Image 1: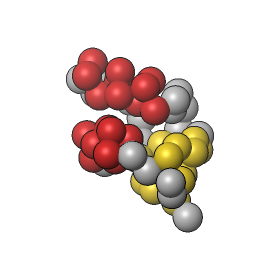
Image 2: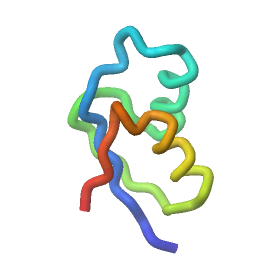
Image 3: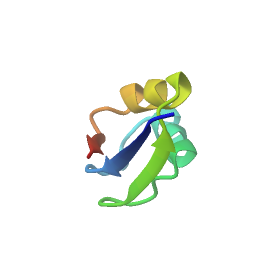
Image 4: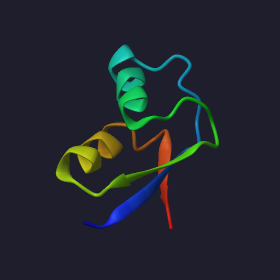
Length: 58
């Protein structure tokens, strides 16, 4: 499986609770934090849900 690195670039303040829970599920707790996950359909779907708050880095 391919791995992807996800970086939080915007704040979770004033985001809906669903998006906050998605960030928690990805393991992101603060701006600038980078986590690495397998590129499964579930993870890619979570990234798509919060695409305005995160970026995928190489």
